[in-house]
Image 1 (cartoon, rainbow, N blue to C red):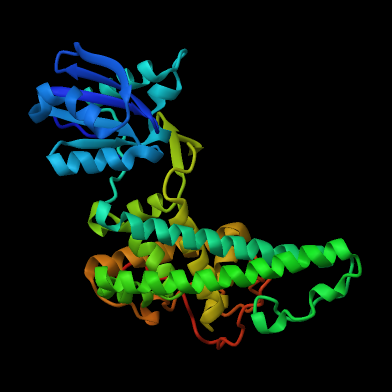
Image 2 (image 1 turned 45 degrees about the vertical axis):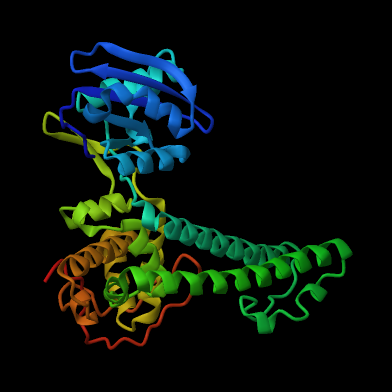
Length: 382
């Protein structure tokens, strides 16, 4: 967690809403200079901070309407701190909570250097990142519709469909399996939505690839050299991380991706994990998907998973692999060099020849044609 400790003559805390905002301005001594509610448009805020425009710093929580505030500050050269809403415990833990109290607490935390910071994503790439998140939403919706067809088939104890309905060419006649007109109509709706979502996904993906190449084609190429990461996942990683320089260590990337848990300790004794998972949920999903693709597409991967399951258990094996891929992405991106498969696998570890790796979380059979004599493992860093 990062904190802004830069001293300023004036500190402005803003409790921001869609149509209104409560503004509190404190000076260095902690005296209140302004404390009132006002309309949300930028003109009202500019008038309120005009007397101390050159000496003020603004802060607000990273709720949905923060974009215009960050853009306004960037356009006029005003320092802006975006507070991490989940970590601002002083706001959530009070006996009383309202807009006036929240604005004063934000200003006080900023003045004391205790306001936890969130990342202010650059405006020029914000629209592309949001479009990419919409594509992820469509992909999840398509997956849910496919699952509903299969669940309905199992619910009515019908024979297995026996073909992959994820492919449009194999969907003809699927709805006719049900004699009940209502179920038949429900499955027709599912299949129609799946077809429509696929058309939207192709159109959005083409637009995203074109835009991403204009932004940074070389980094996308480097990300795709990491095993398990293809075009779609490289786009997610590129736009969610944005600037790898904001992470001083690979472990910081893993923490931001929700791939490690916090630790609670006192007097030298640890008492288990601490706190809720704070980080980027989209990156957590991306690296989890990359771990599954890594296992599916590399012949030597099942033996690696078997070794991880024997050492850490089935529940942790995929997470450990996702963590390793996150560190590999950080290392390759930082060094600006491509990644080879040999650099992700190395010869060490007991039982690496075991061929009893289980199925993945989706019930998918893994490739099991790895040579028993090939010893594999994970490289931490070259």
